[in-house]
Image (cartoon, rainbow, N blue to C red; front, side, top):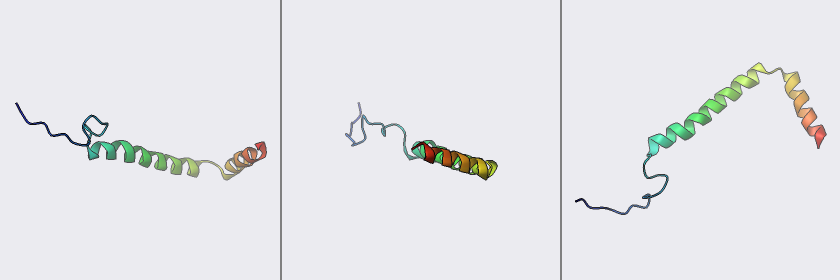
Length: 60
């Protein structure tokens, strides 16, 4: 038999996964998204981006 200490994170989402889990699953996708956006901006022609922006502005 062991002692049980009541912590404020018991029975919460944070109980099992610790900081490394959250670093990998929160910061990782953010970095992948930013790198993907940089690639998409470099590949898209400026005229196409401007056309879509103007079309969205005219819809309102």
